[in-house]
Length: 278
Ligand SMILES: *[C@@H]1O[C@H](CO)[C@@H](O)[C@H](O)[C@H]1NC(C)=O
Ligand SMILES: *[C@@H]1O[C@H](CO)[C@@H](O)[C@H](O)[C@H]1NC(C)=O
Ligand SMILES: *[C@@H]1O[C@H](CO)[C@@H](O)[C@H](O)[C@H]1NC(C)=O
Ligand SMILES: *[C@@H]1O[C@H](CO)[C@@H](O)[C@H](O)[C@H]1NC(C)=O
Ligand SMILES: *[C@@H]1O[C@H](CO)[C@@H](O)[C@H](O)[C@H]1NC(C)=O
Ligand SMILES: *[C@@H]1O[C@H](CO)[C@@H](O)[C@H](O)[C@H]1NC(C)=O
Ligand SMILES: *[C@@H]1O[C@H](CO)[C@@H](O)[C@H](O)[C@H]1NC(C)=O
Ligand SMILES: *[C@@H]1O[C@H](CO)[C@@H](O)[C@H](O)[C@H]1NC(C)=O
Ligand SMILES: *[C@@H]1O[C@H](CO)[C@@H](O)[C@H](O)[C@H]1NC(C)=O
Ligand SMILES: *[C@@H]1O[C@H](CO)[C@@H](O)[C@H](O)[C@H]1NC(C)=O
Image 1 (cartoon, protein in one colour):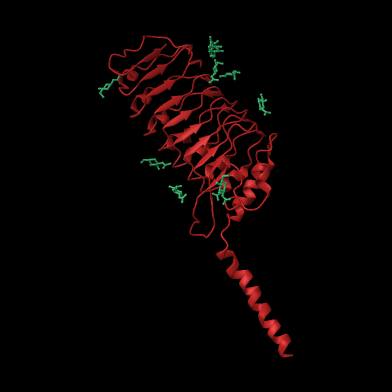
Image 2 (cartoon, rainbow, N blue to C red):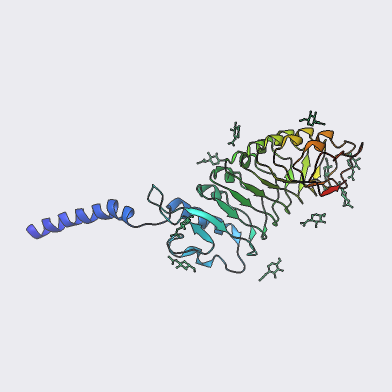
């Protein structure tokens, strides 16, 4: 009788321990981030087996390859993914919307693979994201306007894909963006004059697209602009805004084969301009 009561009490203590104490003492990756990583791998094809260890143990504690975590746990007691370094792995198929669950990620790098499908709008949920590197893939579909609200995005490189549609006006909110690389896609429509609000913009690369309309004179208001490439678009019949002669920071302005007309640019006010291609 006494023994069975003792056993009963011990069982309760054990149950309590495993239910309440264990999870806070053992440090692991946030479970929803583990699920997201599994979904990300599940929607990719990985012919070289680079992600083979993504089904064993814990991502941050057990060292899944090319997943880099913060080296201390967050206030929620879990480890979180900081970077995905998945460049040049011959990955194909698509990007899973679950990427949006990696909400503390700073670097998302899928450069130089063969990934198709569209860019999941859920990437716009990763408010900590600083580098979005998707260049050199087979991505199609439009640029999700959700990405335009990422408050910490320093670099957006989606060049050399098959992205279509227009540049969302929401991208005018990318306050921290220095590098805007969208060249060699199939973007169409007008360059939004609103992009002139980007206070940090240094590189504006939109060459080799299908852009039309006029060149926004307002771009001369960009305070840090160094390089502008717009070659091989079709701004049929419009002219180079004279305000561009006022972009004193400019090092390179490239406007080859853009169907531009009218007077040439007076660049005498741009002391550092090394390349002017028209
Ligand atoms: C993770 O892998 C790296 C390099 O392979 C190694 O230096 C490190 O000790 C590993 N960490 C753990 C916790 O296994
Ligand atoms: C932890 O990470 C930070 C930045 O991510 C780094 O500066 C620091 O050296 C790391 N500490 C250790 C012990 O690896
Ligand atoms: C990776 O893909 C490239 C281009 O698709 C191909 O040339 C190369 O052979 C592939 N590498 C391997 C190791 O399969
Ligand atoms: C993630 O993004 C989707 C689509 O943009 C949105 O509906 C959802 O509310 C977001 N979730 C969180 C947790 O922010
Ligand atoms: C960018 O800065 C402007 C003006 O300071 C502010 O109104 C806007 O909310 C900021 N946008 C983001 C995405 O932080
Ligand atoms: C972009 O496209 C142009 C025209 O098709 C091509 O000449 C150029 O090599 C491409 N740039 C890159 C970096 O692939
Ligand atoms: C370029 O855009 C025009 C309309 O502005 C469209 O008719 C044409 O098919 C597009 N070309 C390509 C290669 O996307
Ligand atoms: C000039 O631009 C058009 C698109 O506007 C493109 O179809 C054509 O190939 C380009 N020509 C050269 C020489 O790059
Ligand atoms: C540019 O667009 C105009 C008007 O849409 C068209 O007539 C012209 O053929 C286009 N030029 C090139 C090089 O595609
Ligand atoms: C260039 O800047 C000066 C001073 O900021 C201004 O007065 C002038 O109107 C500008 N010129 C053009 C063509 O925008």
